Length: 144
Image 1 (cartoon, rainbow, N blue to C red):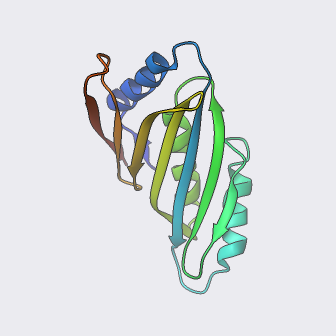
Image 2 (image 1 turned 90 degrees about the vertical axis):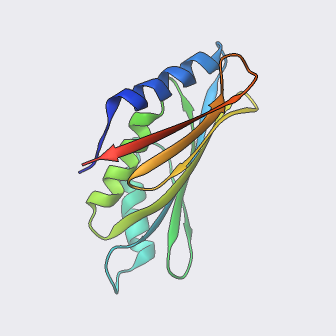
């Protein structure tokens, strides 16, 4: 089971709330997965993963020959880090799939305010500085 190192992730959630400015904030999340073992029914395992995360978000399945993706869009009432941590933990804990990577976009109404990408071990987040004159880059780690 992976745990999120709290300090950087708390800052991420605070930055999302800062940029929210009283508007609706939504997240687009795409989690790319690969089989953790040979000879598994990838479609069945993606469906199991999607079902196990139904309380987080309604994930759509995108399947390819040797990998798949779980995609969702969700309005955020508060931060994003718990949702991301839970999704990665649940997929990896199934034992049949492994998170190869993820991409996320955070929007305030129709405006892109943050991009994020990474894998089961770390994440890179890019978002505007408070001054609006430069971009901030934050490196975050998932810890065991």
